Length: 286
Length: 286
Image 1 (cartoon, helix red, strand yellow):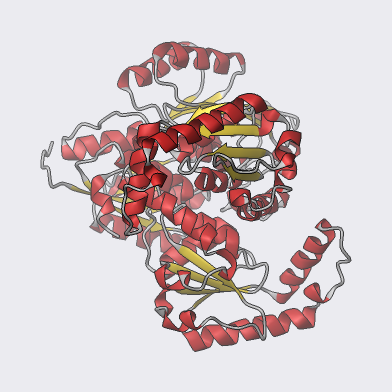
Image 2 (tube, rainbow over the protein chains, first blue to last red):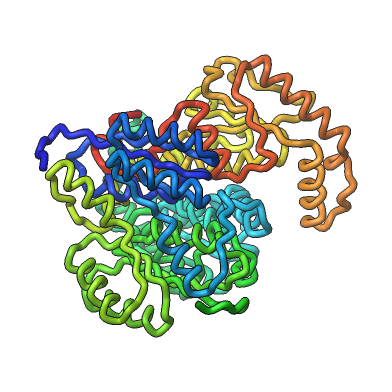
């Protein structure tokens, strides 16, 4: 057992497709070791034995931790044999759940690489959702509220835009509206089902420091009215007042990341996570 | 071994955070079984034993396949014991790679839930990248080209906007420009390092059918000039001509999903995937 604070650990993500699943796992793992330095190499679209063996040999040279999501049985076996023979750590992420479904249903997996990314109806819905998010960002066109699956409201710096884009990637049509006291609230908002509306709020102190930071990053004086704490409180009061009148869900994003807020929104609005569904059957559920 | 074509399989994703990693794996697995009907339940932000046991009991009622990314050792042990005693299939995704790093480095993981989503400097970079993508989408402001990490060019329906948003989620500042013959090419484009430019192209027949579909979805006549095949060829010729002059990478998105195209762009421009890095050390590498 080595114990060296300047340790470098290398990950090799090997996938027959874009490598998103294994990359996410590598990143979640790395986040558990803030003092360790990591390299992350991705070998994607690996669909033949020769390319796979090249990737594995490179991983061996680096003494890497191999995470793979291969689905072709011959490639899975090749990886297992190679890693066994060379005592290279390898984690086969797909086989356990895939094998369990085969065991339960007696149905064979298609073993088609990139099945997650099939250009099916659901995929094109997601593309449309992403375009929708850009089109109806920042209250650009209030007609979007009536078409949206989710309407996000919030004062400046409550992550409306990134949240809209993140939820769009989950096939949800999201429109957002920045709230400024005295600003006109578009009449369409009152026609939206409150169950589709999420009011975002934040702690005044946090907004204050985020906004000062933003001013600084723009090379401006941080102590402007934009970051003034009393003004921020007035903005938040105005927003919370509107949320009450609308009767919508309110989420304080103070200590939440986009992923966490998005997850809370899916739970609160009882929406399913439709991202990347590759199957026909799941497309019928929205 | 059951063999029933109307089989329903239920996934329970259990996470102490937003559940993104396990959800992705569940979706990749489901995509391998297009004929099987799936339910996917997500229990997120599970950070205490009681909530975990409730989730596991619900999973047991549904005879679900449990995928979890718990990091607290007591919760991991609780899940293992419960699933063993009740013969419930459970896949612990985080433990193998986390344990391997501990074995190699002798360093303990922080076992902090949601470490992937720390609101650190890198996280705020990603938020900025998402705002950048919206601001500089669709050639709105050519000054964005000079600040961008990636400039995407392409005729209509080559997925510029969704690609920009997807890459933004990986911390890359992306600007895009739609190409229309006879349109003005902003002078800033010639000042951009060609190594940062990606020219998107597509097969004329595919563009033709996508555009017809788009016209239909807008309730318009699909046989307009927008979908005319000769016009499409002229557009693509114009675009390919420009790509040659710029000396940029060209990617044909005809049979590629956003994830796949994004992965090819990262490879072609030798960019790292910086999404979700939670560690200090990885922040220095861009």
